[in-house]
Length: 249
Image (cartoon, rainbow, N blue to C red; front, side):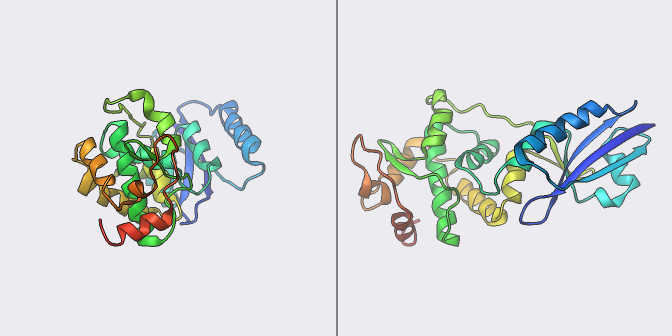
């Protein structure tokens, strides 16, 4: 016999449920459970969770789904830190969130990542009139840059970034195992549109050489060229981006 503990909450605007699954073929360790609950309370205060316990003949999630269909639409992880991150993180996406998803789909250098990130932002802005993320895009020597992402990945230099995520979220029984960055993206307020924009940009530019993308972002009359002044890292505004990309892709 196996014992299961599920901590479930509805947290995101699209109404999907996320959950932490803990199982054991011996008695469940209360300290393991209380440790996570304490961390959540410390970061978020009191929150409403669904707490479920049941027993099956296996420690696998599949056995839970087979016993009770109630759990089938829950996105589960067995990783406490990943669950804590989703519970405590803001619903808004960051440039780093987008970057992690991009790198999980197409490995690339830091220089290329910045250009792809810029085109994803422009595509989303053009489609929705809203920001994909809040961090400003500024003009560096080699094109548009998000400085928080620059600081995170510049250590890789010109090498392809060796970035991997643990495949720790199970979306449906016997079907899909997804990366944390995809889960956060898909459950964000505009997750479907954001995902479509990113995949569209990767389809168009994913195989381009980094300096081909530099040349594209440096075109005369483009947002980067209109604001760049050496040494100043001036912001490329949404107005400049949308007015240009409405005309030229």
